[in-house]
Length: 115
Length: 111
Image (cartoon, rainbow over all chains, first blue to last red; front, side, top):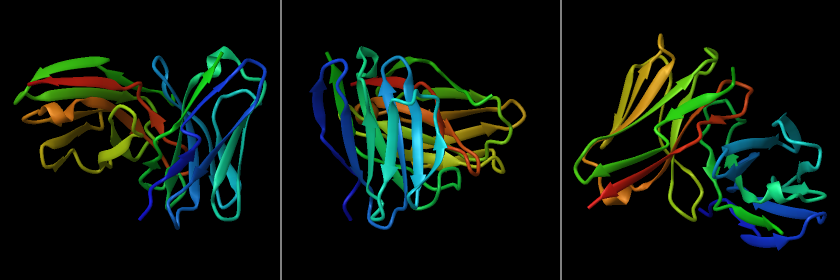
């Protein structure tokens, strides 16, 4: 059974640009969550989608957005990139919605560097 | 209220020793407490999890101890091995809410 797939794995952008990251969940999983991981802040929750609906949103500015498609694949977008957006962006899928005791299965992440 | 505190930030243990990582939370509505293990270049993976109706759960060399009244839980790794060297995250969640993660503990097990 294939795991969570994130693309691209690495990318370099400059300030002011925008970026789109993609996540393909485990087959059958309808919940997709996104986290930002930085050395100083750990794992910070961005948002969660379940059956194409955003269920929860973390405390991030509106420059961070996401969506989920009917096949459960998800994308997140960051517009007007800032240096502080440099981080590892992790996607996690789950069979059940977050908080329902379901295990989160993480991808290997997309490492974004903003210059 | 939504924060999960974790200590220590880093931990060095000799092979065969016991590694102990502690976490504390404030929100008594949390009802699921997992621990995740992350190796460099990989995403976190579930290690072990507990619900507040039990005080301890053991899986192999890994044990979670849960103290509901103190709102604390800890991970014990017995007979620590160099292959256990990784970053460990505690987390907490409740129905309808996203997971809240601790800041992580970097464990190094010396051979």
